[in-house]
Image (cartoon, rainbow, N blue to C red; front, side, top):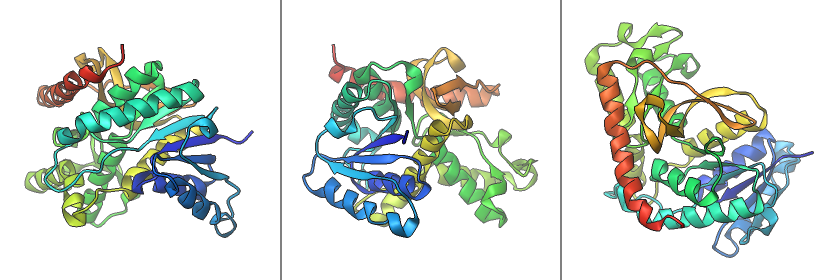
Length: 312
């Protein structure tokens, strides 16, 4: 039986999620958006790439959730875009309401699906989806570290003029300025970064990774990143649908791991058919532990604001 993925939000991120799924022939896609005509038009356009891409994926565009029923995965990308000068916190309440509504609808029509959250501010939006869907924690996961580590790996590869395939980078914490790139555990073909770069270069790359999203927003002026975020989300989709059990840095609901309780924070997880099948606890140095704690505190501040919207 063919698999089915719902993508909520037919903007740049959502449409590109659908595109990657069609290109890899992973599942049929239902593209949902509140704007009449947009998901239908983009869905039909994408459907017509099938003969060219040699993909028999069926793409459907709709404004209602009926056609999303019995989806295996729902990717929530809907929300207001980040604009120049706008912090992730500025997006909090408006996008919280959008994600809450989407998660409720997804849970109603696909009660056994796995939700992947992409909407920003990411970690807090995972919390909104978790509360509203009432799913167990293994079936709500956020796309954060996959993108952040991809940015880290890109900048390292550029600096050293090596293949991105040889670069392995670990990023923990919230998705944003407080993320924690673990330089100590990052390497190129097993060679530690500290043996390949001086500290000044490493610090520059870490800073660029932390502000990777803002750098793109500054260039675009009227939008935010969408190619890399959508590709990152679909890597997670593929690992789940194919039960590949990839170990990826994702936003997961912690219940004591790393000493953090009751919030979503980026950590290494095993992603398979059951969603988050394992959370890996990396032994941190005292400095890394403090940085992760500060990142978690930043997430908790946003979650405390979101609690005003939490369904009873």
